[in-house]
Length: 300
Length: 242
Image (cartoon, rainbow over all chains, first blue to last red; front, side):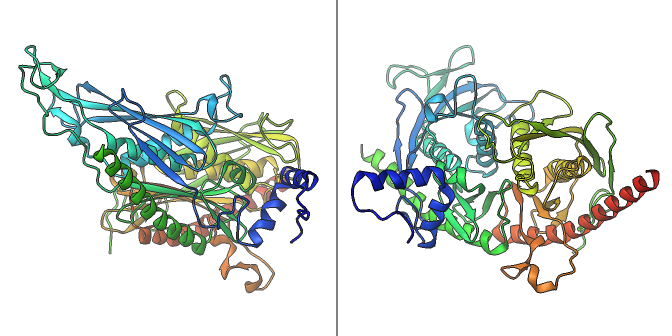
């Protein structure tokens, strides 16, 4: 095949590593000819994905999502606020994405990651425009009180496909979210209820504890290189092959977003259709993983 | 189906385009692009020596600074900068001047819909004015999908906000070639059908998106013709002066 022949001793292993560092594109192309990637994945397969709900005990909803090595921690805190005059019976969601220096050697305290504000904006556009959450469900007393949900996502390990993992952790955190019980006190203000039985005030939202999620969005990032389409790239693949396509589909196969920011490879109709087909498969996988995680929590 | 648009345009009609180059004298290249009321000014400084820290020194580096009309620079501006940078990196020939940085500054003069496509078009014209080597031009259009499924081109800001979804699409410019028709095709499609950049906002069906692509390609052919006429005209003007 052309790779230095592996006779098992240390010297040939070092050679392969050196080849990988010195000629990364040729190293990858040798693998792509055999329709495989250096981590033994076929081209269309995403990395192993896990979701752990309730990772942050003090938050109202939280989730830790891992796709391969990329790890994101999402937490939601709810606060009561006065709704705006234009939308008196709607709540609000504020989404923020952080890349602390722990996630990657390129990020240092004085040198914030370039990707962070971009992923934050794309995340908040996707979540708000997908209609996953009906903001009217976040309303408490029309015109006077509504919920403000602060969703913070921290990247703990950046190894490619940041947007996918961040979106997955956000969706999982929302499905884990439990709205705290509140009641009206004598001044007409909303306060957090103490444990049921001890409080003598009627809770305002005793029944409504979970948010209804309709048309949940899931995404897949692919890298285009010549005629190959690699699903779910690692950070190394993203840095070598610069054409990245991110497709977000919701559970009814509607296209929520298709982002292709530049890149040397031009995307023709067939490539776009292949990316969308790969994303459809991935949506089914992710739905299953999320449902298993949720039912696992309920058993506990 | 006939669609009523507020300014009386038909579905596929673009707003009046205007482009002038070499308007700023200190910049190495500059261009002003307007589509209807949306107006963007782009200036190019470069190539300057040295690249930034994390960039590859064997290639030229492109840096984009986006200045909004009002307000502070926030996340939307950073997103525009990233999209513009990647689009222009794929259009410029980066191996000609290695270890240099070319800065492109985009100033929004007025935003009335289709802001990012106008900025991409302005930046390309500014790069041409500065003489930066490019493979082809990036021609950007905006398509909007309405709730009933019809697609309109080049929306105003009001139309963008009312519609269910919109897509910014960037294609290479159309090719006039002496080579026979078949030899320039890739996978059976002409080169100008390939998408350089696509940014969508809002929910649309997959079929709507492909329909937008078709309309976008047709519009990019018209825009390519406009660019070609504009560039040829201005170059003959300057040769008369010189």
